[in-house]
Amino acid sequence: MNRYWKLVFVLFLAPSILAPTVAHTAAPFPTKRIEVVIAGNPGGGIDATARAIERALIEARLIEQPLVMNNMSGGSGDVAKTYVAQKKNDPYYLYIESNRIYQNKLLGTTQIGIDEVTPLARLLTEYLVWVVLADAPFRGAKDVLEKLKADPGSVPFGVGALPSNDYFNIVRPVRAYGADYKKLRLASFKSGGNLMIQLLGGHVPVIATSLSEAIEQVKAGKVRLLVSSAPKAMGGDLQGVPTWRDQGIDVQILHWRGLFAAPGIPREAVAFWDDRLSRMVRTESWKKSMDHYGWYEAHADSATFKRELEAEREVTGKLLRDLGYAK
Image 1: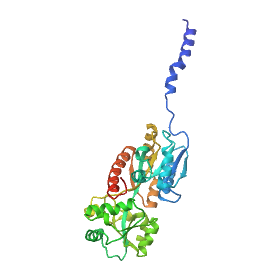
Image 2: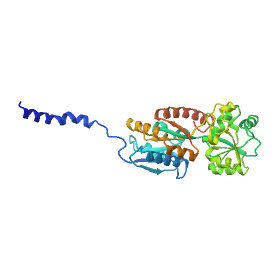
Image 3: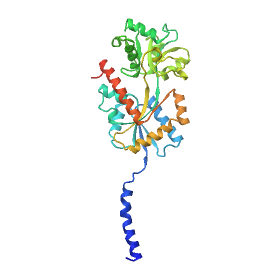
Image 4: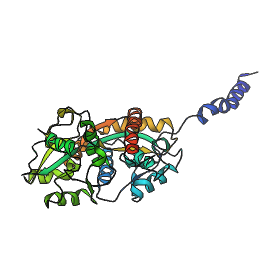
């Protein structure tokens, strides 16, 4: 075979030799816009989290494709969760949610829980507090616990919803202290703002709520914080506020918000978000949002988040069954 025909032969074979390599090269992620489904109305805590994520990713140039925000309220998060769960294997749908991601399935309002979505990251947390009027006779949480131990119905509590993290921040420490948590007097109100009105009006002596719902009245000198659900003593607005563990009670509750995706998305997409979100939480933009909203750093990558969600689900499920909310 002369030199000419050798060259023709090589050129003829080259596409077939190279084709398999080209065909199996995955396209980079992401290559188009990403829809971020927000399980709540504009202006709420979950919405604020989504906007803070978008702002931080764009300002730090951590993502080139646009993020399209889609507020989808209803069903205590179940409407948004169902929508994303139906996008199986599609990495272009994200979902911002709280512990409702597993709690609602335990309560029987949906069949979709953490096993039907892809956990990507826990991003932040608030901490929960017991709040009393500034001139209340209770000097600390143990004063309340002692009364409850003697008579579980002697101190009515106000909470935003039943069940909820605020509710667990009453039941879990009361149970751990040895009081009859099933005989507590609890009044549920529509929102944290309405809950504070009930406390200020003298309708309930103690409320359990998030720090962000109470801090303005604390700064105004109208109310005091008795205890927080943080795992250890904190600075900032929780400076000097004891934790449950400071009281000798092994309880901590993270009122977190996290990012999820549709089920079955490619590993490359999960790895992308592990990288970008771990970098995002170190940006100045994210830190400004944390300070602005009174949030606390609680980042966990996809593997850690999934593992801790499973542990939370077990603890919460047992408690909900004990209280008659779940089977």
